[in-house]
Image (cartoon, rainbow over all chains, first blue to last red; front, side, top):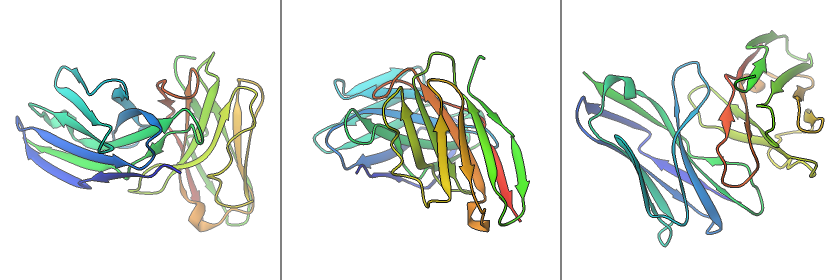
Length: 113
Length: 114
């Protein structure tokens, strides 16, 4: 089945700096790659997703890149703000086999003011 | 409702008792997922329902865990003879369909087994 690895597990940046979180996946059939943000005591919330037919997607300060050949994808947050502090999860899902999302282990991002 | 609703939000139970957790998905969402999240950990897949297809139960950790869903409505996750290692947040999510559609999560049920 699918296996998603995520790193780093913790990341501390200064306000205004960029943050990058990386994930790799094992199943070449996976074609949907969302990123979720989870704040304390809340359920995960989708912040951006990318499908396998594109290599990059951007939404304001957030961007995701996908390299299907290498089977890795990354989240980029620019001009970080204290409210970006949270746990971020990457995930992968295919259209065959297990169609539920398989999640990475999470990255705790701390933005220092 | 506007989002995925889970109840109860918190549940404390004694070891050995059975518990039932409820998930109300977003109306019209055919896919429903249950995940378990232990403190400080990632999301562990439990079970997936898609329309009238047979559910994917491959993530259920033992036969003490079961889940049901009637049609495209409410789902219940039942844990029998609870153990302390079952303590976790149980998250439910739904999406319009499987595959590449956004999954919306509920707030979760925090289960504590004492």
